[in-house]
Image (cartoon, rainbow, N blue to C red; front, top):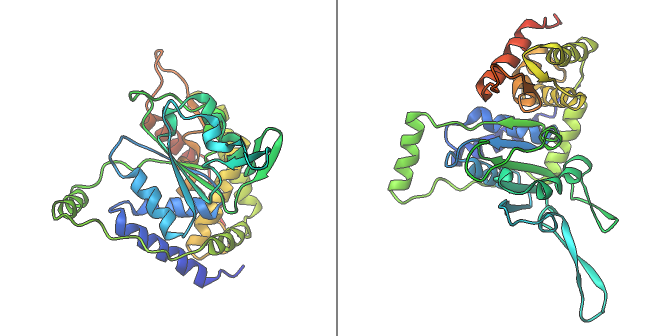
Length: 317
């Protein structure tokens, strides 16, 4: 299929705008934009202070998305997320007050610091793009994206997200510490009391919807489908993993591979599109086996997946 070059140009302009505010994280920026085009949700996990929230806000501004930001703490209730009914004194009836989730981009800051009950309020919103309160289901705006940040598990005040919720995030990314030169540039901007450049809107929600339609139409051959299925099967049969990639994970790999092909101006998926996104899409969906009673760290989990990706033969197209 032919790719609309104007749309791809808008997408790359959005990446350039975000780079103005977020220094030295080009690959993370591209993968977040790809996930938005694939119709998925993003989880940013890292220690405090490396720019997770700055990235989220810059993303919303570049794409002109109506966003709400919620700081998840132990006292946040499910109704704060989904909404609730309040009495209207003038009419004597109850009316619905929409929660923070009714927006195009929901910034869930430090999502793993709140209770499991509040976390579960997002499950329906993330999967069905709707919210049910008192047996009444309401559709969320289109597009709807959850961009959540979390501190590493084990940090003070955090608790693990359940597997059912982790599986609803299409991709999990780690910002990491900046390079020395990038950190020096950030320090220079702050010490001179000048903020980093403001992010200008370069896309609209309509543009994003059109990009999603384009990405969905990217051609995937039977050989690529078989390749993705064999990768998922390998995770389920590997003794180093207690839990392999779910079918939802395989669908997410396919959707992200399509977005990768579109971002590179191709109307079809090639094996390198799959390998480019595979680890980031799957690392939070698997559970490593315990070694001497201890779970391997995140780096070891990623190395296992990279090893699986390297050992499964890619099709020659």
